[in-house]
Image (cartoon, rainbow, N blue to C red; front, top):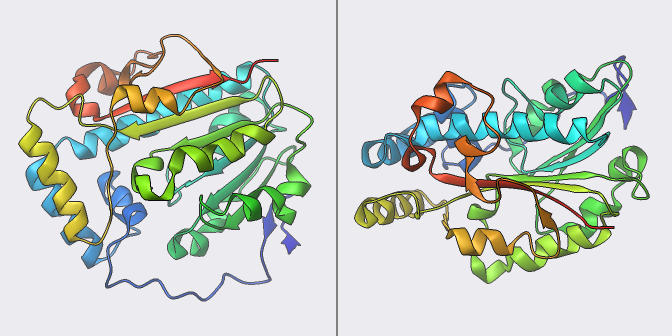
Length: 283
């Protein structure tokens, strides 16, 4: 592990050589396509195009989810949170967690975690910290909580005696019920100290009027080899169990403490397609 001039950590002297499997769609690269990014391949674009044919609002919904992340992180920074664990961060794009957090508190420290090889190849973009702060990147899967919580990158940047912001934004709908996403999430929640913050968003079919359309989207993802499990508002709310949900609760991501952004104001809840919420671990 070496440290660059910004105080950020990079796993080795050079960008890693990895097998991107460009012939197989990946959820992170499809999401990058929805956001208007260029770090995607023909297989990703083909799969995403099939989803867009069924539900064109998935692209503006993805952008709305990204804006939710920014608002929630800046809110957490306003509460005094200075350290963040962002699991399932995705391909670097405008408004990364460290950019939002360090815009409020330059000394903020962020550990990014993702299991998509292409994110690893672009990790330097995630490591462009302010001089006062620090960032690190960990190539790991959400399910491997033991490795993530005990990794040297985590131990070096995160002090679990002080409040932490845990982010699982647009992640758990890619974890099937058989993998017990709630149980895995509880492992992370258990080690967070009091006054920690959880920032969470999740795809849902509750906001979509046409159930056939929703089922077609799920089939499109499954057909591309990407499992998708949208969940209800009640189920999403269960992920916050034991923590104090902040107002306005579990709501469409566009409705979580809106800041007047005209793009959010123009979207209907059905177009957002996802619930978001923020909670604090009680003392």
